[in-house]
Image (tube, rainbow, N blue to C red; front, side, top):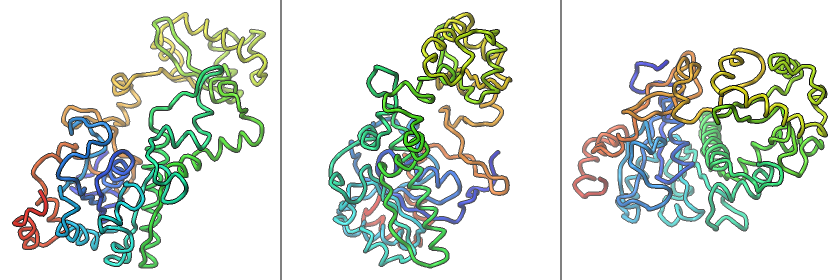
Length: 388
């Protein structure tokens, strides 16, 4: 699954400077590093107090890169970072608009030093607009796009989907996608540019198909009454005899028909018209009673290899033991902590096995800089305590 080379993967040779932040920026940097990019993380000398602090081995998004710690209010440190930027293909930063400019590391100065640099900026609200200077988090960003309103059960408040939609799908992935597009373009033009990766924009983009369903009248304003939001009996989670759950999602008619046959419900009057919304609540009660008759794992054993679109709902600890997850190596162990493996996978240029995030806490600043600066320059900077 993993390549033998110390720096392998489709992004081997790509160099990225990550200005330390929280959430979306670090995960985007991890995505790039996982696929072979050389990423150096420029961190603060003192903890920022932002986000959810935890021991390094559990901050999984910090894996696969080395770091230096500097004071960006020190002109020598800013100059050193500019030297790194001069050799980089891309930069990642996640501050409020204007902060990097005040630090002397704004796009104009960085692109003057490196005209082919792709300068990635990830924020919740974006670089402009009336909310650009206002604090926020994932939940706020998905609120104003319409996404949060659509999530939840009928008659209940909207259900926050953890912080995966705004921070990581609309933020990290869109930033990584934008950086790679910019790098490809810069290889042809020789010119860099700024990537404004706003989470509100990313979430709206991800909701494209859903908004199309709404426009077509197939997804109404009332949450929990539609096909994909727990309204339909055939797209739902059902409690089993042991209090655990299975997910059931046979949207297509042939899969729905097979499920009913295997449940011995093919002749039940309430289940005949799959798309009859007036029957959905009562049809759901029929299936709920059926799935309560056996345990989750028994349903999974009986139906897991059939085209009925049924899967057991596993917690994080259980997921690593699922046969499919194990067979593909989707989850891996790094220093006793379970990590998702790098993705996606490449047939000719596979990624290397990731280095755990604890590498960031070791005394590796000099080693990190050796990928970027001459030895004599590193020694001079160390003598002045420009970095630690």
